[in-house]
Amino acid sequence: MSTAFQIISPVNGEIHAVCPFATESDVLQAAERARHAQLGWAQVPLQERKAVCDRFLDVFAAQRDQIVEELAWLMGRPVAAAPGEIKGVIERTTYLLGVAEEALAEEHFEDRTGFERWVSREPLGVVFVIAPWNYPYLTAINSIVPALLAGNAVLLKHATQTAPCAERLVEAFKQAGLPDDLLVSLPMTHEVAAKLIASPLIDHVVLTGSVGAGRAVQKAASERFVGVATELGGKDPAFVRTDADLAKTVPSLVDGSFFNSGQSCCGVERIYVETHIFEEFVESFVAETRKLVLGNPLDTSTSLGPMVTARAADQVRRQVEEAMRAGAHRIIGPDGFPTDAPGTAYLAPQVLIGVDHGMGIMCDETFGPAIGIMAVSGDQEAVRLMNDSQYGLSASVWTRDADAVRQIDQVLETGTVFMNRCDYLDPALPWVGVKDTGRGCSLSKLGFLSLTRPKSHHYRLSA
Image (cartoon, rainbow, N blue to C red):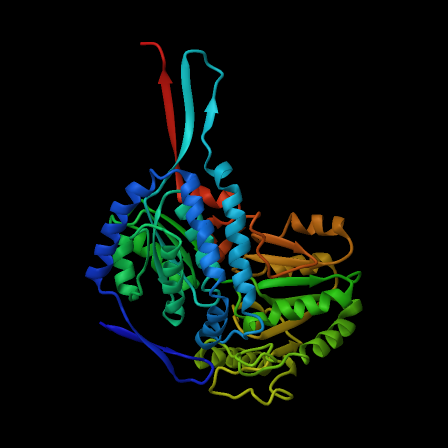
């Protein structure tokens, strides 16, 4: 079994860091300590738990410059775009702090004389959070903050590519006054993670990752009555109706398709455009895409950085090549982007037309800077194709007609429906998927529910 792992930077393909794996013994002992610490934390008043999370924001925000550069080296996000993740952490944490009291409040029933009856929200215990590399802070914060506010302890396993981000989160909470053992970073192998999930030391698992990872987590938990919340793959569609404002729609969809080099769970991965405006839309989309600058993410002029690994970039190249062999036409590729280099993580934006649902580019998760654009006859065909997917995280409709969107919304098989926007998580709304995208939800008041359990209290006041 491996005792350490290497982090290869997508910037230059060189070893950025070598980090040790926690041993099975280390992990189980940390879980035992977390269980003990959680008992005391659950008795701390909510206002004090909120104060710790509030102080965390100050500590985290003060590290802005280091975080921005670190994200560039670890996963290739341009320094010009990286501050958005810091802003998102602040926005989501601030919102969750604001709704925590309401979400965790007791519910009392006073309709029976001589009785006291109420329902409280109790912490689950120890929550195991498995976070991905593509948004290493945002995805983790979605669960860490409400879990801690609810009185839980958290064990955190980040993807190895961004393991230093987990350490930064733990240290920031420590500086904010979080007691020891309540938030612990544990870089571990998949085998050790499975053993932890199967042990009685864990009370809930939150995973953001691939469908394969979701199945592995469910299998590890299958012998126990333990909750598992998952956000997995996506193939999010956009539908552009004839009456869309293209001056606003096109830049938004280019950003939704290529931000973070297309490595976003809710990034736009397929676009359907009504036939009447198809050529105009494609022409505008191409012009907007060519404004992107592919290059070193440490350069402030770069708007499209490398993918996380050369292997990931080559997988996207293969998917594009397969579509072209099947009849698709690539209208944007390496030409005009001299820093695109096969065998490296640097991949130019790929735009294809002449696509259909017999091609992986329109059906299989891409998770990279490649998009297929397809003409449709109208709402009915668009909805059929948008629903023709094993995934369902978000979908967007671009139009001036809100009533039309309400009709389409009723039949779209997805967790979130956007009108005239995409690729954004509003912390007031639950983030949830359907089909193979997973189950459970995060954010909003509802996000606290899966991190707590209801406890009923029924008192007869007279003997």
